[in-house]
Every structure is written in C-alpha cells, then in structure tokens.
Length: 298
Length: 300
Image (cartoon, rainbow over all chains, first blue to last red):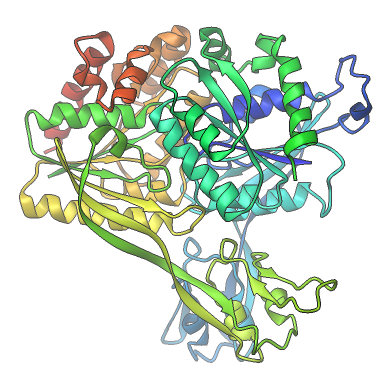
C-alpha cells in the first residue's frame, strides 16, 4: 500500500510522522508476530521533497546507488537543420528559438516534452539529458530508502519526483508498505507525489494556518485526485478547535494526535526520530498504519 | 522603494509570523505595500484581515482536451505524452474513450500536433485568482492557485509585478514580500529583484540543512541575505552553530526569537505577534526590524 504523507502548510511534522511511521512498521529488532509482519519486512520510504529533502537526517541511510536525472532537452544538428522554425512554433514554453541559421535552447524553460523533436521536418533534433538533480537509493536498517535532490537554482521539481517514483515503485507494487514524504504546499510537486497513492495522510497543527492549509490539501487530495484522506493532529493542545470541527464536518478521520511536547521538538532539532526518542509511540504508529490498511485505504 | 523578501527553504519556520510582525512595525514609520508570494498556501491574509478591492482571474496555461466523437482511438497521444497524462480506455469498458487527466497535463501540446484525426484541442485553463486588498498596514497583493495547478511561478511573478507597480505609483517606501517554502520556481520568481532576503531559520538539523540551500539560492540570484533564528532557545547549541555558520559566510544574523506559545495565541486571534502586549517575542522582532531597516537604508 502506498501512503503519501503531506500537509499543505510546511513545518507541521510531515517528516516526523513519515519517518516514525516507517520505523514503526518494520520487523527490525521487533517481536512482531502478527500476520502482516511478512509484508513489512522491508518497507520502502521515498523522500519526495526534492527541494528540501530532510528525511535522511533522521533515517541516516547508507546510499548504494545514485543516478543523475533531469529533462531530455533538444540538441539541434545544424548541418541538418533547415531553419524552418517549426520547433519554436510548437514549443509551448518558448524554450527554443530560431535566429537566422542558429537555434537557441533555453534549458531552464524546457519541460522535456519532446514535441520539437517529434515535429522537426528534417529530423534534425536529438535529445540530451540536462541534469537538474540526483536520485539515490540505499538502506536504513530494514527500511529501503530513496530520495531525490534538486540542484540549487533549478526551477522544476516535478521531473525529479516523477523519475524517483518510476525508479523505485514498479507498476502494480502493492504488497509492501511504501511511505512517501511529500513537499509542502498544494501545487504540482505535491500532485506528482500523491498520484498513484492509496491513501493520503495529512499532518496538520490545530491553528488557523494549519486549518487553512489543511482545507486546501483536502480539496486537492480528495477533491481533485479522489484519494481517501486522514489527519494526524500534531502539537495537539496548542491553538484552537478549528481543525477538530472542520474534520468532523467534512467526515475526515483524525487517526492520531501527537501532543504538544517540548521533548518531541528537542528530539527533532537533533535529528532524532520521534519513535526513537519516545519509543512508547511505536505502538501508536503501528496502530495508525493498521487503521489505514484495514479501514481507510483504497 | 526597497524590496524585502522573507524566505526560509524549510516550511513552518515562521516566515509568515515574521512577515506580519515586520508589516505591523514598518507601517508605524513608513508606507509599505505587501505581497504574499506563497500562492498555494497563502497565510498572510489570516493575520492581516484584508478587505478585497479587486479580484482577477489567472490563466496560467493550457491543457489538452480530446473530442471523443473525433477520436479514432489510435493511441498516438498516449505514445507521445511524457507526463502520463493520457488516460487509456479500459479494455473492459467498450464505451470508454481516450481522455486527458488535466492535473497531469503540462500543456506541451505534443499530442495536439501528433493526433492524426485532429481530435485534440488546447484549452485555456483558469489556474487561480489574484487580489488587491486593503489592510490596516497597507495594500496587500495576494493570490490563490487552485489546488494542484501548475504555473505557481507565473502567478508569483504576476502578484509581485502588480505589487511593485502599485508601490511605485503610490510612492511607497517598502515592498514586503512573504515568500513560499522550498527553492523551486515560485521561490525563484519571488526572490527576483529583492534588495534583501531575510531568511528565517530554526535551530534544528533540518533548519540548518535548508538554510544552506536557500542561502545558495540568494547567492545564485545575487540577492544579499540576512538571517533570523526563530525558536532559538529550543536548542541553544544548534542556534550557536547556525550563528557561527553565518559568521563564517559573512551573513548578518539580525535576531534570535524565542520559542513561545504567544506566537500561536496571536495567530488564533488573527494578530501580528508584535501587537499582543509587551513580551520577549515581540521585543526580539522589534530588534530584527531595526536591523533590517538599517540594512535596507544602508544599501541606499
């Protein structure tokens, strides 16, 4: 089952929840003898926040393999080019321009769609990889780990997330738990992360900012993508009742509450996972996963 | 007119809390225009209680649409699409047709040009709205990108352009921009043309990691940076590490703000934290504003 952990608002505890969830469902060093344990031997964790990937600070994986990724951008063979201008005409992003006998390509505008290549009458366009980031895979104990990192100054996170997911998730893979740590916001990088997920776990805080962004995240995950959603209320006890009232009215289950606790914030500041600092939470995260699997997932 | 942008890289470090406080303090001594460049999760309006004066539609791009009656089901569109945006009909459902998933479509038009039956057209899509509002601290330009849409960078550019023109027309002294999290296209759009980027960080391993990346963005685009350490007393050794890192890079630390629930209380009441009594968080933010103001006028 694929669970995407997202939030709308940043800094509500996505990484805390995603990391603790994956650490709690491994059989690593645990007496975990119920029927699901077989499937959970090696859960997969993907850090899809490629602009600011932080989960590795908590999981401390050993990386075994690394690939450069990016977009395929056009490379024009000027000997074959007839300067007809068709490439510039079909490009929706103004990423290619024909000036006299020359063709200019602007890699930061190119989406790598391949339309210019397909439409070039003399077939003078070839494609080369424009590297915009790296994807890496490895192990953190029993957890299979992978992350993407976008290079500084690059604008587009989506291709890196797409390639990370394609690399790590074979089509139809549903046997083992796959936890996706999403970027903040509700724009295209979040959509790319959530596509194909079975469940979206939204981490929020009980404040007006948390509620405002939770609504937007629900609108996107449930409204636009049609995915089942559930909520984790982090820093429970601060703020107001708005999130509770909204979830009740919108029929969204609150699956876990993590109280406002300075010890949790301090562990986080040192890069220590919640369930490592406070092992009593392990059982609650395990119950959270079981609840998603049995009751709420697609 | 000076342009100040608040950024952080990592989300949730307190950008909007700092932006609202600086708006409150700045408005007491100069005229300012505000812009919320976090268009997919805009929170500044929750503290500034804006009254909308203008609402405009935002059309960012196009999406492909397949006319079912003209489609010959050859599958060429699905072949050329690199964004998995073409939904193939299920063999089990004979009446189903090829269709486009508008959320996955990037509007590249590759399918439009390749369709042998001319069954595809490119349709304009409204991706959001932008607004000019009045607030007690000055006009606010803000926007709402519809859930899951692309072109957030374009919308940020539009909001900033409108705010900048208004500031120039009205002779405002300061354009204060609350930025988005991350380092991608909306951040790049938001930082363009700024005189100073105030980077709000926190003394955590994630905060420090993301501070380095957002500093590289400021460097990359030639924007001078200053740092404010929020929730500084949560982990004093980490806060000192960040201060030492900044000193090593010759980046000014313009303040350390304590970790206090008054920040949440102010948010619940819809107020900038500097407007809630006299307390350490408010005092720290006053000190930040004084240094930021000096820095901005020093660059004159």
